[in-house]
Length: 214
Image (cartoon, rainbow, N blue to C red; front, side, top):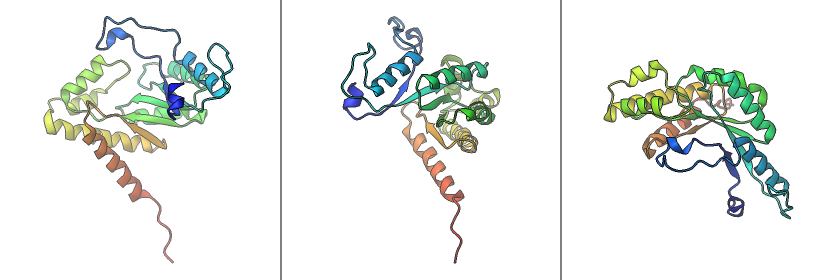
């Protein structure tokens, strides 16, 4: 309700990771609702009712987002979960970051029938250590052996440069099938996000069909 009052109309409904995998492992996890329950609650707010059914005398105007993890070993299971989220009222989808260009096509083929906007996550890798940490420690992220090998031993500016090259290839692969991506900034390195934004915009401008000369 506070978000609505402040004019924030886009919300991503997540179950979230267990507290024990975060930086406050002693915190207690609270699971009053999961992501589907949260989506249903927000949908009810859009209809003008609180979670307990009370008439709010007004309604919110949220665009409800949900998550999809194409990195799962059983992607069909994730597709079924996504279908449940969309049935519950989600309007758009945001994926976990992908690091395998081939996964862009797979994700498209598995989700194209839903007919909703899907934003695929792209996050530049910083260096070899960052690559291994993401692959081994962060739930929902899988980095292919080929990419890990490309990043192996690369630190500092060399690692940044290679990570950007990987991210550019991923942007190309995603935009071949999807209308949008979202860029994930690693560890406050906004300069890398700026560079990827510039790359995508320049590529879009270069490939835009020009009107015929008369």
